[in-house]
Image 1 (tube, rainbow, N blue to C red):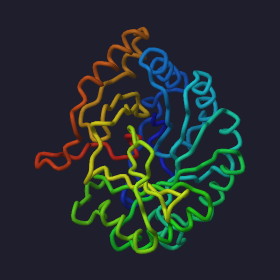
Image 2: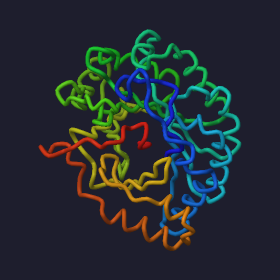
Image 3: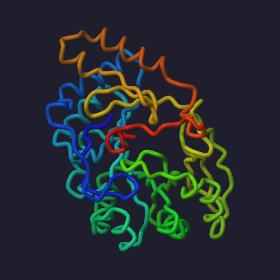
Image 4: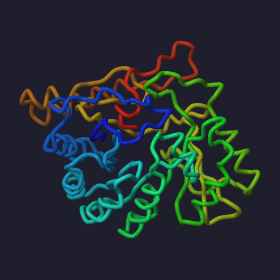
Length: 312
């Protein structure tokens, strides 16, 4: 569930330095509309976990109240964040019932962080992670994207730091979801390359727990108990096991991260439709889900919306 398309970083693999044209406030779902859709999804459609994303979800003023209302439905609640602002919001989120956090961190070098995000906020991110841990939001997962010639030589360093600090690290292949549409397969650091870089410093062996629908392939690090995950969304897609559905901040259903079609639930909400009609539209959208994202197909077209507006 994307709660906003706004973000307070300008990561160069996501958006331009000047940012984007944000959604007008009147097009964004209200807190009540968000909670109503989540309630329908949980009560009528069998959804068992709700993850809040952005943009940057900590920028949503009603976040703690939305988390509390979702927690009251008896489902697992999680949050994907850049960790800016966690130093202030973590206690309230934990009290509201948030179960766990995923935070984006591509490097532990402050200069590289500033180069990637175009913001000198590395130490604020670290403070946010520590505040989340202190609030009981643990274990924390970290998501990292390696960029060729920027931080791809820092993979082992990042993993060692994450293990030392008790964080679960996941490396993600860079996906064609940037606003600039400059993604290039040849420049992408692949899962095989990530594995090779990590193996220069650690012994990685396949983790024996079933993967299920989880996107990450897990590996034990030096025999465990620490693990590292590699999410090969591009080179080893896991579409056949995907069980996710995405709601954008303006109330559109996306049945795939790379979908080029959306189903409008906001219009139903605001036209007075009952819950059954909304659930029916939602189910119909999911039945249209394709067998795979098709990045390897010559006819693949990148979605018009970038990641910050989709809520991946």
